[in-house]
Image 1 (tube, helix red, strand yellow):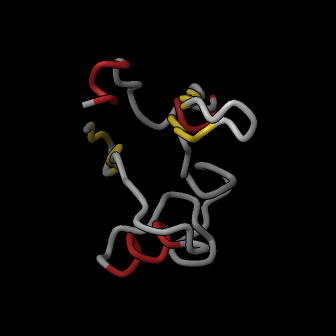
Image 2 (cartoon, rainbow, N blue to C red):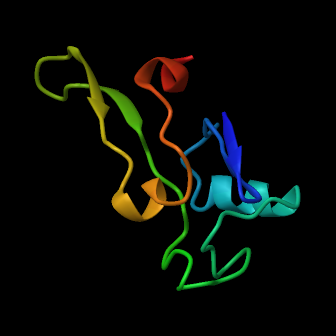
Length: 92
């Protein structure tokens, strides 16, 4: 979606709920997440945690059965790394 300073902003869609699925896959293809001390490289001056964020989550309400769609803004530490895309760009 966006690239700057050797970093890329990607839209990743997990296939399963397996632990570390996205982190492991990105490291396996030679593109570890920024700040990923377990599968990539750690640089606490750059970002102190793996740069992985769930922007959108869709689920079914457990009581009403209605679909829910939740959105979360990009955290400040990650927003400093790359330009923030518009909502329309993220949803495409």
